[in-house]
Figure 1 (cartoon, rainbow, N blue to C red):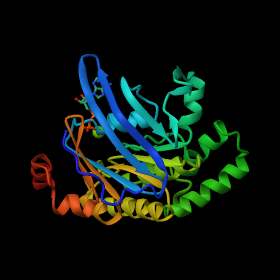
Figure 2: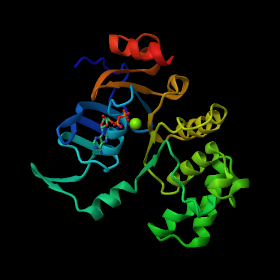
Figure 3: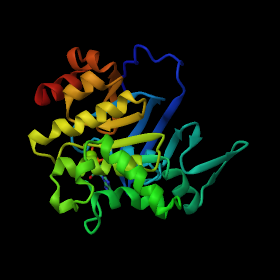
Figure 4: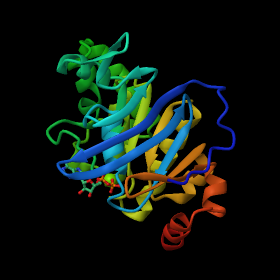
Length: 265
Ligand SMILES: Nc1ncnc2c1ncn2[C@@H]1O[C@H](COP(=O)(O)OP(=O)(O)O)[C@@H](O)[C@H]1O
Ligand SMILES: [Mg+2]
């Protein structure tokens, strides 16, 4: 594996995500073949690469939705899925995994809103069900979040009465309602009509400016260049190249990166 290092990856801020030789297989198919990377606290970390390269699988590993087969994966200094005692690892119980997953917000390509609930009810649901928040307080907080994503006036709309871009912004507000310390985005604008992409990216840009740690799988190279702090190009389950987004996108060092970028830029 060839890899260029991030130019400014000093130990200034602690790692929010740290992957060391992460391997993941489905049956006999090895999808992640030893991923090493570090997402620092407060940074926007962009992940690009061709379809099938393992980007979604890696996000799902971070979020405890997939179990890795080898290597180590840490979120906020803690092993994902295991507890370490001395030099022994103990698998966490499902309830413990669920507790950790609460701290990580995930936004998918498809918005997955509850269709029978209004926008504000979608945002209120998890804080009430999972955190036991009172309805009135959950409502207040949900309205604040809808305001933040520019949709306070759509609070009473059902998902079917919202555009794709509006639904995606509600999905972001819903993830934020759990006060995550890390947000994962899996191609959040890929399913949107082009004219709706900008509003979603604006919300993500605001979120980045607020200091949220974000891992973003995206084909929006403009966003990666302007908002990203780090960028990784993945192909075939390995990190091919990484660094400052401006550097990697304008001056890719690896032939595979050059070939990919020539098709998408
Ligand atoms: N649950 C699964 N079972 C079997 N194969 C899977 C599963 N999830 C993903 N894969 C395979 O892993 C590879 C990487 O998929 P994915 O992580 O979705 O890539 P990307 O997000 O980069 O397009 C693909 O070949 C896909 O078919
Ligand atoms: Mg994917």
